[in-house]
Every structure is written in structure tokens, then in C-alpha cells.
Length: 237
Picture 1 (cartoon, rainbow, N blue to C red):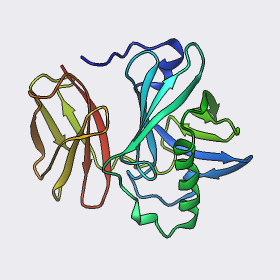
Picture 2: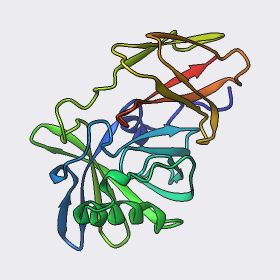
Picture 3: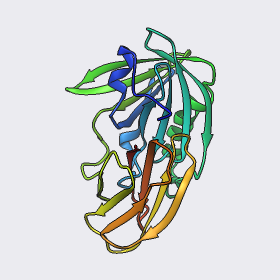
Picture 4: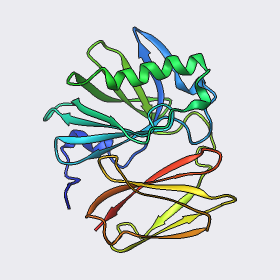
């Protein structure tokens, strides 16, 4: 296996969690993402994967951020990291919101926080607001990016429901859709954000041969005809 989930203590709360974009704070002013009318399953969110003790990857999803990945390097024994590199593959431009000025403004702040912060030190910490944990990134200009441990945009976030098994997997992974009326697009990404496999399917249970995959972590992303999306991760043994 080419990566390890061994982490330093300060990283543990970042793992095995989907963090949902809540707001940006720029020059002391709040811009709430939750005020926007975002389509279900398009909400901006991130997952963080630690490749070893001091290196990791931020995988954003939804609008903005889908299709990008940002490589980070932690500062040992501190709640700090730098973004060393970023790349966007198969990016969704979220055209549904291209005429929404509020979305564009928030999107610019959101993207700028990552894109303009290469090699700059970013602090991260946790806050509890109304009993909900928040992950907070702070840049060198004291601008902040808030992520919540719960999705606060819409109560029915996971409209596109599917499950995968077994996980970890050795040879054959099964994708089971709870409800399906039209074909869904299925893409498999490796840890570097590259598309390994892409196809369409319209059956409730879909077998996927992963016997030739290298051991490691992968992401499977489903998109339906309404552009609802959901991503899950699996480990190939």
C-alpha cells in the first residue's frame, strides 16, 4: 500500500469526515454559503486524506470546488499546513449558478483561499457553534474559511443514495443504488485525482472489477441526469 493512515495527534479530527462549506470571513465580514439556493448534492464540501504523517490532500466537492485537489504539508506538532500544489481535473464549472452574483462572490473568495495561498501558512482549528463542530481555516491575512461537521444548506442533501461493498475490496466492488430512474455516470478517481475509469449504468446493483487496481485509496463519484452527485471512498487491498 502506497500510503498510510498513521497521523499525528493534531490531524486525527480531520479524517473520516465530510466537512460542509459554511461561510467565508473576509476582512471581518461574513459571507454565508448557506444563504444561497444551491441544488441538492451540489453543496461545497471537502474531505481530507493523510498520505503520511505530514502530507495530505484536500478533495473539494460540489460548487465551488468539484474536480480539484490540493496537496498540503503539515507543520509538525502544530495546527498548521501549507498548500504545496493544486490541480483541477474533470472540473464541474457549476454553470447553474453562473448568473448568481452572490454565488460568484462567495466562489471567488472560496477559490482564492486555496489558489492564492500556495506556500503560505494556513492555521486550522475547531469551534463549536450551536453544538455543531466547525473546522476553521485561517490564512495569513486573518481571513477564515468555515466548514461544518453537518450539512446546514438543505436537510435532504443525499438525494442520490448509493452504497458500496465490500470495503476494503480485493477483486470485485459492488455499487448498489437505492433508487434509479435513468442512467448514472460513474467515475473512479485515484488519490491524485486522476480518472481511472468512467462509464454509465442503469441497474440497481453494478459490479466493478478492481482486481487490476494498485493497492490504495480510491474515490467513486456518481452523477445522475439532474446533476446530483455523491462521492464515496474505498480501499483496494
